[in-house]
Amino acid sequence: MSNRIGPEHGLSGDSWAGLCSRLGALTDQLRETQAAGSLRWRDLVRSPLSEEHVDQVSEVADQVRAYYAESAPGGRCKHMVVLGIGGSALGNIALQAALRPQTHNLTSCKFRPGPRLYVMDNVDPALVGDLMLQLERADPGLQHTMVNVISKSGETAETAAQFLIFRDWLRRHLGAERAGRHIVAITDSSQGTMRAIVDREGYLNLPVPDGVGGRFSVLSPVGLFSACMGELDIAHLLAGAADMDRQCSESDPHRNPAAQLAGMLIEFATNRGKPNHVMMPYSNSLYMLADWYRQLWAESLGKRIDLDGREVFAGATPIKALGTTDQHSQVQLYREGPNDKVIGFVEVERFAHDVTIPSGLGVEALSYLEGKTLGTLLNAEKRATEYALVESNRPNYTIRMPEISEYTVGQFLMLWQVATAYAGLLLHIDAYDQPAVETGKVATFGLMGRPGYEQWAEKVDKSLGG
Image 1 (tube, rainbow, N blue to C red):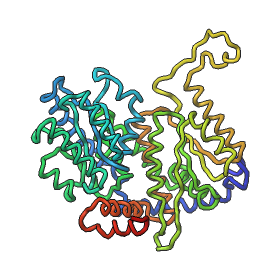
Image 2 (cartoon, rainbow, N blue to C red):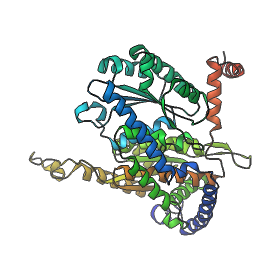
Image 3 (spheres, rainbow, N blue to C red):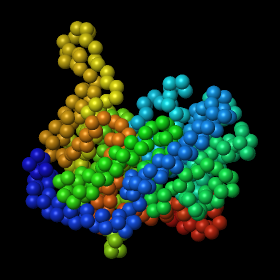
Image 4 (cartoon, rainbow, N blue to C red):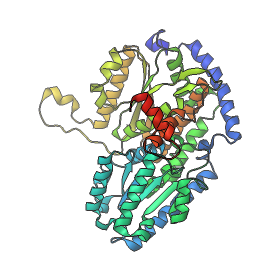
């Protein structure tokens, strides 16, 4: 606000009051849109859909566990490979990173809940090849390995290529019939290329809900299945999201955190010359949530055309940083470089494990640290950085988690999804399409020789040179 960072860079009480009036009207608009069935991603956390998905996901996970109990030495699925790109991958990565120890994949089967999780979110041949080699060494014969392919259509080039490779790999090691028992597909419930493959091959499968785009799908079976296999409490995750959804349905913007967040960020982006939005969690566990946020904010809001067909080039650039690491690599720029950013901190009040700094070294210059915890130091660093930014008239805000749990992560995910919906309305753009991404997809089809897309290869060569 202007009383903290000055009138040139902060919001005045009058401008905030005007913004609140507009946000109240947008809350009514969102409520009407959802009642008309056009916000299916928001229905994911409400009964009966949330209960239906928990039941479906739990049933398939139980079938997978039962199969490995009967067929694999030791009776466990030890390695789970998720194939996907964009929203099909980032949500899975974020949940795993936030809610499992950073050393999860290094921990032995005896002490680790669920399988090791590997999310193949790229087609980098070294990444894919190295993982296959590692799993062949760790699990000769691949008896303890499963593959979860996530694709609504089955035709996204990256996921399709991954699927063809890993399907063939399983068949070579396990035989054609048994290999199918090691694949679980998450795809459209009734149509598409992957649905046809699933029906032909008889894979266990779960639905990608109708009307739910990839970047809004983490609270559907797309994100819930790997979480359930990792023995996370998916019902608690959805309960936290539902709680936040109720808060973000409040008509009064002062009681609606998503409306506040979107209102301030879009005001700074469009009218205050601050279109760069940094998310800086002070927790390594939450760092991949910043990755998930980046796709949500960038792909939803970065639009050339608004709802009236006008060329507007809307959007804000999401940037991720990590406290305290990036105090030593980015904050110099954030404080003394262009004042074109809003910095969002994520603070954790209580860590699952904290470490006390020992006493006894006998060095006076370090005695102030003795007996304190690393959690105390980490949050002091955050508060000091917040102070330094305010002193430099740099706008910033803090989201506080009392702890990192399924419930609070569910709250965080829903907060940003609803904030994105508000931001789309404020910018008067369609927050749910991605036409620029589609252009890259069809150009890739042409370059890879897919029939019917030859003209795209010609366009690329003409534009870039043969």
